[in-house]
Length: 173
Image (cartoon, rainbow, N blue to C red):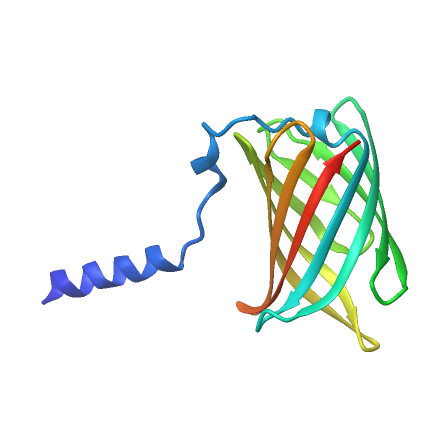
C-alpha cells in the first residue's frame, strides 16, 4: 500500500511539472537570440481569456539591436481597440547561457532559458486592468520555425490559476 501511495504521489508531482526547455535541445533550426532578435521584426497576436474567447488582438513592431551580450528590444503595440503601447526590453546574456530581461512593467527580471529552437521566458508583469495593477506570472515559450518566423505562446496565471494565453507570430524583415 505504501509503495502504491508513493508511486501515485510521484505521478501526481510529475503531472504538475511543466516541460523544461532542454527537451528541445536537438530541434533545428537552433535559435540564436542575437541573430533573430536583431533588426525589425513584425508580430501579430491575440490575448485569450481563460475560457478561450479572444479578448484583444494586436500588431507589434520590434526594433532590436545588440551591443556585445546586451540587447534592446523596442516594442510598439497597436491594439484592436485603437490604443497603442510601448515596452522596451533590455536583455543580457548571463555567463551560464541564460538571459535576464528587464522592462518597465516587469517586476524584477525575466529569466530566459534557450535550447535548440526554443526559448522559455518566465517573469512577473505589472498588468493594469480597470484602474488597478495586478502582478501576473508569465510562462512564455518561443519556437523558431525558420530564419524568418518564430511562434510564441504565453501562459498567464495568478496564484497558480490560469488567466489566459497570448499567441503571437513573429516575422523577421
